[in-house]
Amino acid sequence: MVFLPANKLPPSSWHVYLLRCRDGSLYTGYTNDLDNRLAAHNAGKGAKYTASRRPVQLAYTEPVDSKSAAMQRELQIKHWTKAKKEALIAGSHKRLKNLSKRNPVS
Image (tube, one colour):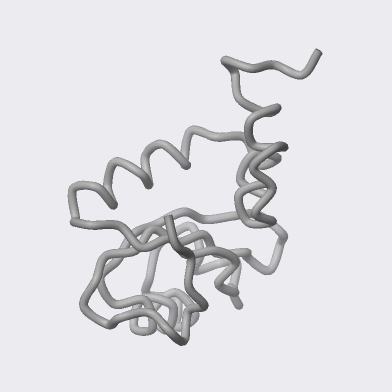
């Protein structure tokens, strides 16, 4: 899987993204127009959750093949702990594996 900086993403492809809110919390979503979606979140129109936690910053984005794949990946990430999301943002695959329920830290 290839991860690209937000300013290098093709405008018409689907993405799963994580936003870091002003209070330090993380919001997970998906879109096919990352720039407009981020602007909507920062305008208070993106989601009820982020409206009161502005400004938000893009912490992570992952291109996916389709809307269906984006929805599935978003749901998967939403069920993760904050620690696991932070490991994803940091690109720490070893930490992600250690935080997995199937591979608990011993």
